[in-house]
Length: 278
Length: 167
Image (tube, rainbow over all chains, first blue to last red; front, top):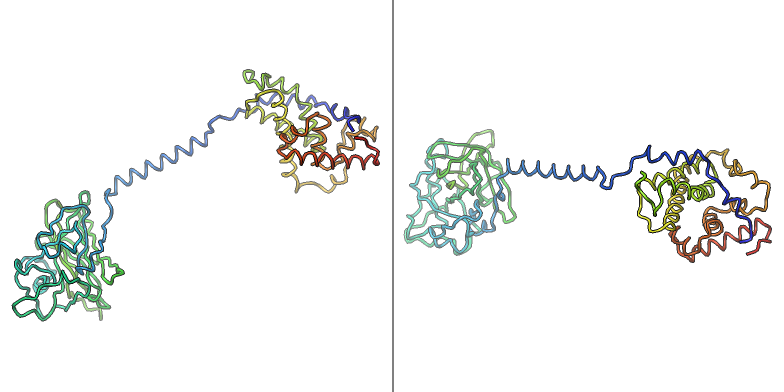
């Protein structure tokens, strides 16, 4: 087959018009860039979006992790952590130091210590916040629990957090609330409160509300966000959107606003405490 | 453009030296002058735009053939759905040199009537004098595959010649 004539095929001459057009390619076609512009545009857009995101984060973000719910809610029924990496003041009540989150400050208030003197809570509710479930028998006076308060039995509290048997006649009803104190982390200037309490405190029609007071003056009041946790407790949080003043002590109270039969009634207090912005 | 060299050759020199080779590949593959011209121009546009770093003229020629074949394949793929019914019965290469039709036993005439996959291999082997391994590299095929295609292509040519084709 090699003897066959391939010359005719090889003798295909390129038309001169083709050659002229091909010779004009350098003038009519631009050489492609070694680094295409679209790549530069893609990189620039990624950088731009990143910078915008960073600016937005630094402008509106607080740079801290959100509120972390510690696993100790079951041990104290009301315990929660509002602070991250803060100092510990568990010495205020040594009995709780073994079961509470180490970065939570829990301080128990006397029944006589004012919580709030505004419209909420009422005087009877103020008295009801006196703790009895966890207290130091040597430092704290015996609780006084009004009979009108809703009975609360913390079912998940471990034994070490159970109150010691008082020598005096025990109260007939367990307390409804427990005082906790949280400290705002740095860079979080807005007043907000959070608390955890047993879901057994809630009735079907309850709407959990929160009121925050500044030395008896009502700062903010509204409906709280409620989350039912796996361990049966309720986590409620309330964010006022109001900037806190450094060093000022705010009192918060989570209470139920019963809406059944369209009757506005503020009833039991689920949790109350103080918040200090340091 | 005069500054850019392709294996030591300027663009114009490459065009003058290898235009016929690229034309042959395109015409052989497409059997249509208009289509072949498109692929011919696209091949040299790619040469200009990409400006590969060629090791030698052999490398340059193989690259041109490879790109021309790919351009033809792409062209066929793009225009597969737009082939008119009239073109199916048309004699290929209406404007081929008159000598092709005058000599029915011209192997080029027969080559144009083989299947495209054989045609490429036969063209590169007999017309461009490439070896099997070189064809395998150009076409990105296994050398054994190229041998098989060559063998079957020869069989087709023999049948066209009535079985009297010699090896």
